[in-house]
Amino acid sequence: MDIHEHQAKSILSDFGVPVPRGHLAFSPEQAAHASRQLGGPCVVKAQIHSGGRGAAGGVKLCRTEGEVRSFAASLLGRTLVTKQTGAAGKRVDRLWIEEATDIAQEIYLGFVLDRKSERIMIVASGHGGMEIEDLAATDPDSLVRMVIDPAAGLVDYQARELAFRLGLSGKQIGQFVTTLRACYRAYRDLDAMMVEINPLAITGSGDLVALDAKMSFDTNALYRRPQVAALRDPGQEDPRESSAHDNGLAYVGLDGDIGCIINGAGLAMATMDMIKLAGGEPANFLDIGGGASPERVVTAFRTVLTDPNVGVILVNIFAGINRCDWIAKGVVQAYEEVGLTLPVIVRLSGTNVEEGREIIRTSGLPLLSADTLAEAAKLAVRARPTPLAAE
Ligand code: GDP
Ligand code: MN
Image (cartoon, rainbow, N blue to C red; front, side, top):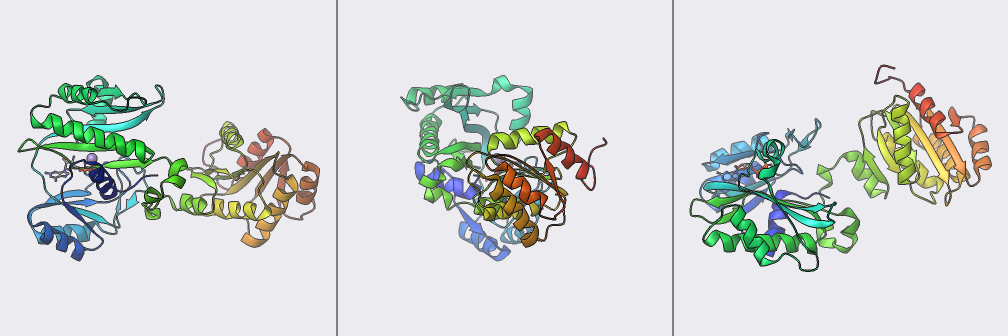
């Protein structure tokens, strides 16, 4: 789960990272009020769950209150498309108004989970700022990487070594060690997946301050981090995914037109592969889980149908804990309750498969039954109203 910059700054500041003063604004009036309170030049920043805002016109240094007000008015309600959002972009509903900082140098600082070493890794560069991705691509060796031993935690000599490798000196070293420790604790204590400060600025007077902050969290750990879970902003999520999330379904929206309702993550992945092999494109990943009642199947249909691109639905169930007759009843119920008009391909296998197939066969509905996964995928590709790719 991602959170906003201002939320990440507030968390990191509580752990000890130096951040500029700032205020949240949901209207141009609030933005103007914030700039009066800060008194002096401000940076107006779109709060969306994405980086690359600067390059997309979502960050601006404003000298006067009037400038803050008019930039805020132009930004609020707009959809920003950045390098990271995809074509759909993200809507700007809130702004962060921050006192401007005089930047002498921009440092990049990131904490990520390194799956290879199974440890938290620090990635840093003395050449941070908006071009860091280019630098990572053209000169990856210029990034400093450091792995943290979970038994010892981040130790001060490591933090100092990193400071030296970035060319920091004097009071910056102590400030950098404090910042690193704070980020590490925030990462560890809140079950984060990523903490990123870019830029961590060196100011004209030689102090360090975090001008941007990004944090994302392990969704599987949110149950024990209610204060983090409360920071969720459904307005920034794919609407298809938030409704699925609210219904307790594991759903990921994709770009194709074949809606998928499947039980088990592995079977869902295999089904998506089969669809691709048959020349189609899945519209989603959806795992309805084990023991799915007919009601849950109906909810799955509703979720898949929130995506207007869906032209056909493929139901693929291997019933171990599940029962094929439940699933079949759910499909029939969905036809009636949702007023389904799209073709539906059903492939059932496992517990009570004969009862399930009988329900599908005698339903009198335009349901296509398939015996194997390969057959189901082929039928789905053929049943699409508007084929995407040339076949
Ligand atoms: P991002 O593009 O989404 O990563 O947004 P950032 O918060 O990093 O802002 C983009 C750029 O704006 C930064 O890399 C800085 O160069 C600049 N910026 C951000 N805050 C300030 C500030 O307080 N003063 C000045 N002069 N520039 C800033
Ligand atoms: Mn940034």
